[in-house]
Length: 245
Image (cartoon, rainbow, N blue to C red; front, top):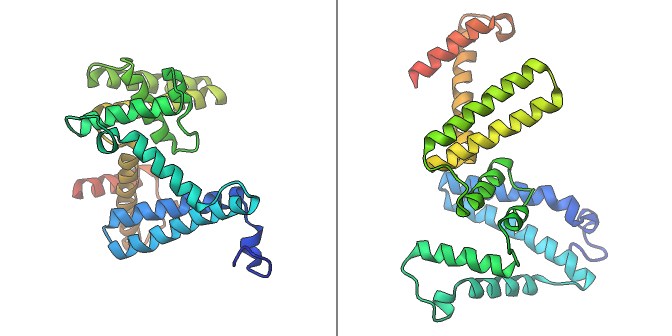
């Protein structure tokens, strides 16, 4: 009804492109509800995300291309194809073999005949840290990986050195490239350590916010404005916050 003549003017005007950000925001809000462990909130956010899926399917249904049933049918067929140990006669020893078979079947389904093709198929719209991790995992499956964490750590130090050199040379393009290499190396170290780089960075953000709140509160107690304090003074308060953690 909302998309029909006489419905809501805003809904009628929407396109896939105009709804793109809404879809991302709703997906992240589902993740937030999961992190909070709140079933009621999760139910609400899943509904909001489902609405976005229905919205996009409706736009294509109006064009006569596909509808929501087609979307669900394709998902069911994909699940059946990638679970031959459930819907077929393939035997597996455990979840690890399930994942290996899933990856093999996915590559066959998408006609990914080379590792390069699997890398180029990683969505560019992913958060950069996750995209880097997925690309590195594909390289690792081909044997292109460090044998121990020290190798990844050495590469991280090398990338930091190259960033410092780029900054000394004051080349904007070179600095951006070196920074990208540093972040890529950091993701590699995180992956090798078994840590989720996206989650790790979020936790560091929360930690920084908490410590900075202490800095601001201490400055206020002394009757001073942050803008009137030196970096050394601020750093001293920040280090005090660190010691309290």
